[in-house]
Picture 1 (cartoon, rainbow, N blue to C red):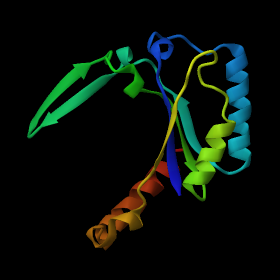
Picture 2: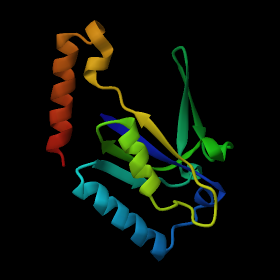
Picture 3: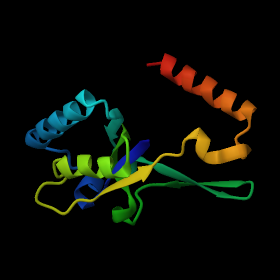
Picture 4: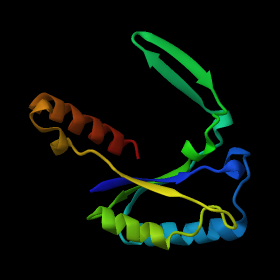
Length: 142
C-alpha cells in the first residue's frame, strides 16, 4: 500500500521560515530510517503558498489564482510518499517523526493512494497498459 503523508502548514511555514539545523538533522535521520526500512518512495518540503498558484475549473473555463492562500491549516508544507503494509504501519512511522514545527502544534495527514486494482472494470486493459507505460517512463528519468 502506498500512502501520501502530508505535513500541514502553519503560520511560520507560510511566512517562509526555514527549519533550523537541529530539525534538519533530526528529519534527515528520520528519512534515513524510512529509506533503510524500504518505506520511503519520495519526500520534499514545499515553499509557502505565496510562491504558488491554483487553477480553478468551472466547465471549460480555467481561472488562475495566485497565492498566498488564506486557510493555512488546510495547506501542505511538505510530504512523503511511503510504501507500507497498512495504514497502521504508516501511523506508527508518523508517531516516530520529529515534530515538524518544534515548539508549536503540528499535524501530519496520512492518505492512501489509489492503486490500479481499486478502479475495477472501469480501468480497462488499455488504460492499465497506458499506466504501466507512464510509470516506466517516469522510472527511467530517475
